[in-house]
Length: 381
Image (cartoon, rainbow, N blue to C red; front, side, top):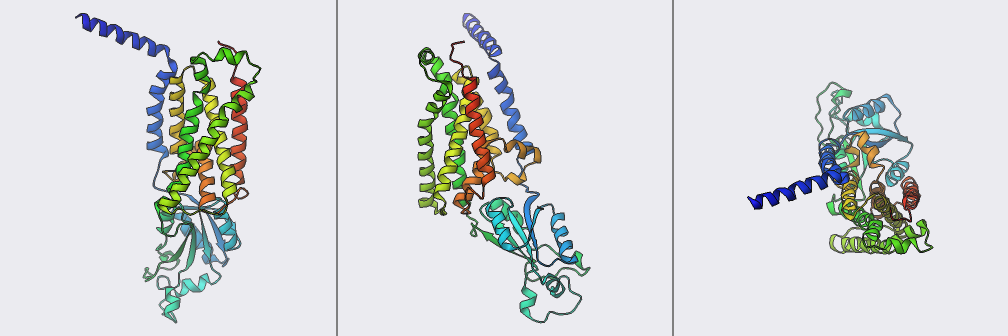
């Protein structure tokens, strides 16, 4: 009985302590809630409304009907209309679109000669019979996006004519850029840089200020002439080199073990990685100025890491998420860096091509450092 009494006393004491620690109690509720919402609502492997460009070189009624038929599948959504395939390739390279639908000038003739939509007149040659009606240019670096576009390759064209489909060749030709072999490692390894840097950089700095307080070093900092911004910059500099070392390890081993190709944008990759490291470290510093203990800092880090990783596009396609989830994803540095690192490494894109993500990362770093410096108070309370 005495043992049960002592256990009961400890139990009640832990409950009282948990009730006073509102941060911990809030995380107990919010972490499973966020996971449920993310996996049940935001995460979706059934990709819809992939942003694509259209290059309509035919400019006929048939081409417009064909574009409407493709959009009616809900797999893709036309967001840009371009004049040449070269412009479409540049749009894919800069990640404005994930694919381009190129309709040739002789589209009407190809459709008329097609066995699936012809009017009973046999084609003149076998070459004409085997020619695809149009072409898809696809960003093959994302295997799930490429797979969704490839599902349209044999789309029937019977709606253009009431004759039943009978094509011996695919309706559309699909050209996969950047990863024609559809190797998963090509997509995973560059994205892994963003995931590991997100985890380590935020985790390292989220307890930076709290650690000084718990170790009793805050009195020393108060008595020094160090300004808040100077303290924040000094805190993150060592971790910048750690982040660069991790990047070299991941990409170097990825190239040696999995033959992940590298473009010629090494300097752009270095600058983009530095911006992402700075943005992640500044986010960790903001969390550190909010937390009252290292336990709270760890809990807040987990709270931020879950949506940051799951919504970044690393495991699940960004285009498969609902619109509100995409808006939330845009608030995290990992989402922008995921586009940047895959662009630099796989598509040979540059800072100019991905300038929107670069500018956002710069703004996030400046804002994060400013907020952390303003929140840090050189006093013990």
